[in-house]
Structure formats: C-alpha cells, structure tokens
Length: 138
Image 1: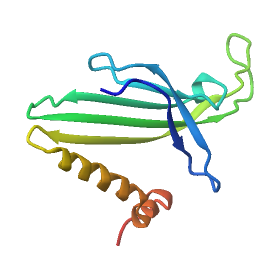
Image 2: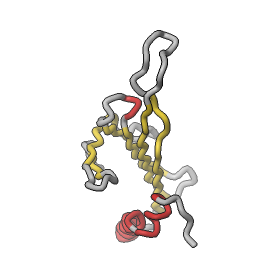
Image 3: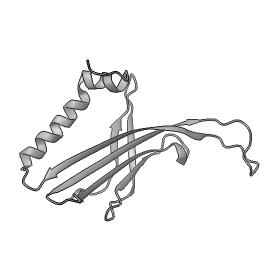
Image 4: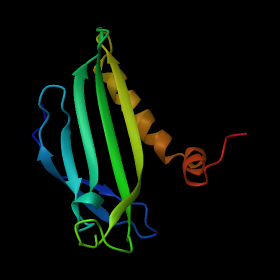
C-alpha cells in the first residue's frame, strides 16, 4: 500500500510545467484519496486529483478509479448580494476519468500490461487529436 504524498504531473503547455498535487486526505473507505494543485491561488480554482481503490460492487474484481479536474476561472463584474465583488468564479472544469477493472484472476503481468497500454494510449497522436481537436476518427 503506497503512502500518501505529493504527486507531480506535467501540464500541456508548450514548455510543460510540473504541477504538484498535494495530499488533502487519504482514502477512507469509499471516499477517495484527494490531492490539490494550488497554483490558481483561490480554492475555487484548485485542480483536483482523486484516487480510489475498491472492490467491484459485483465482486470478482478490484477497481481503481481516478479523476483529474481542472477548473477555469472567470472574473465576474458587479457585486454580489453581500456587497463583495468576487475576484473570480469557476466558469467550467475540464475533467478526465480513468477506471481500471482488475479481475481477481489477473496476474501482475496483466496489470503491468494494462497500465502500459493506458499510458501508450494517452500518448498516441491519434487519441491526442481526438481530445485536442475534438475530432472523430474516420
């Protein structure tokens, strides 16, 4: 079982910048471990990473469920009902969900292979185009 600690992920800038996701909470039962990347300066803009390891609800397998959320902030003009003007508000969030299903019968090599395939899939230029260009594969 890995100990909770910082997770560093590179962003997608032309010159990638390593972003440090700091632990907020460890996994507690069905509540995932949560990490915050705080470069936005305001809680509403923090990027989040959640990681959950759990038994499949149907049995026979374990699940690893991960979610990365990257909010985009916008400045809102005018004042709120309490007289304060918010510096920024969340306009939207770009999210990624990844789920691994690991059957009880799978071997360590099976788990290594599926992880390597997932890494390669996300690095593949065709898949990158589908995400970045919002295009279908023809």
